[in-house]
Amino acid sequence: MSQQFGTQQLGKLFGPIMLVWFTFIGAIGFWALLGQPSVLKAVNPVWAFRLLAEYPGGFWLLGGVFLCTTGAEALYSDMGHCGRGNIRVSWGYVKLTLLLSYAGQSAWMMQHLGQRMGETSPFYSIVPAPLVVFSIGLATLATIIASQALISGSFTLVGEAMRLNLWPRQLVVYPSDFRGQLYVPFVNWGLMTGCILIVLHFRESKNMEAAFGLAVTLTMLMSTILMSTYLRVKRVNPLLIVAVTGVFLTVETTFLIANLVKFEEGGWISVTLGLLLMAMMLFWQRGEAIKAQLIRYDSLPDNLPLLQKLSNDLEIPKFATHLVYLTTAEDARKIESETLYSILNRAPKRADIYWFLHLCVEDEPYVMRYKVDTLAHEDAYFITFYLGFRVQPRLNLLFRLVVEDMVKNKEVTIESRYQSLNVHRVPGDFRFVLFRSFLSYENDLPIQSQIIMQGYLLLKRIALPPRLLMAWIPVM
Image 1 (spheres, one colour):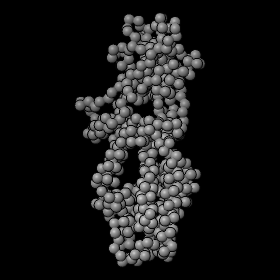
Image 2 (cartoon, rainbow, N blue to C red; image 1 turned 180 degrees about the horizontal axis):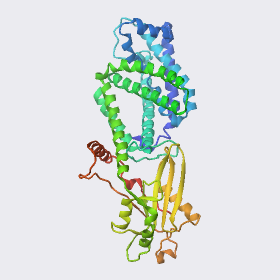
Image 3 (cartoon, rainbow, N blue to C red; image 1 turned 120 degrees about the vertical axis):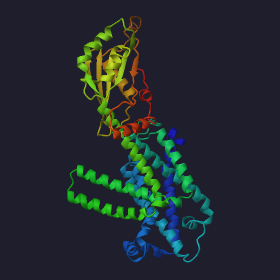
Image 4 (cartoon, helix red, strand yellow; image 1 turned 60 degrees about the vertical axis):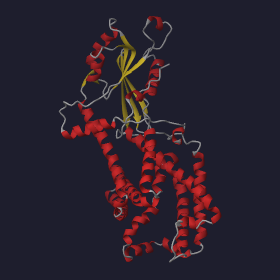
């Protein structure tokens, strides 16, 4: 619930609290390790090999051992906010304290061989009794901070998926002036609902080992595949690509096989959620592609004389001083037939100036530029915005800045054309026209395309309404 107000103030405590947490578990682990220092032999990979090769069923223990590696992925989900240098420096210290903690717990269990374990975990068993309450409070704070990595990572991923047109447009809020900090209400409340349902289903964290382990294994496999794709794009030596990715794929596939044994114990939940998200992205991406194929375009230069005549026809009531349309046309010489029909046929909309806006998402993250095509001076303009995939496409604000820039350069006048208002240089009104799409029952689409479009239109119900996408900020 606190995400909507931003975490810039609370974030100042993240570093100190995590430093205290890792220092605490490392110190407690070191103290317990002194009772049985021989457990440090486990650092030698020979013992891990012997466990797999000589112990019956040792291979299937990898599913549980793998959970010791989880958590590393949370560091990288926050790389965009913390920076690569900070993570590299902190990683060595975090790794050391984790090894001390695990070794201390192992030492405690070696000292209690053959004894029945109570309900207390080995971690809290090595904590001195006077510090148990403190350790529980500290662990709770560390858990809340660790969850921030998941929340921030989800916001970032969904934000970039929207830029790449792989996810329905959602409301994105910037609660602070800190770069990279954003808040997506739909994702935030969806995560909260999902967490509550998961807790109600599994009851205890130990019951979700299979689901968690399988999810992280699949994440690592996808990261390896993405890495191989990146290396191919960079034209790295193919033999080196095979060698590097082969090592990672061998280790990760081994862990995947070990974790698949627990598929029925909860792993199916991770797979189901993953497939559901993939299906939503596929339906949205394919639906947008089919929609683009169905759009018909007309020549804009051929229709300019008609637009100019309509603009000067005083017999038709003026619809707006400035009339703004969003267009998918990448060329200033084209415009959707539906847009022309809206202006000319569907209750003719007379305006002094017609504006056509097009958004082009670039492959670079932080590009921000625009190009203005003057179709007819003081009558029609076509503006193309070139934005990086990590730039928030706030077309209302960007359009305002462009118009203000054009006014300064005397490329356009925005004052009202009404004589009583023009004398006092009162700015004219700006009005956006947005369309609503629906799938006709009489369409000729193939069955597969109809299913995709039905799913696409269903996803549009959770998408941000067009009127909220273009909440107009008046040009001063």
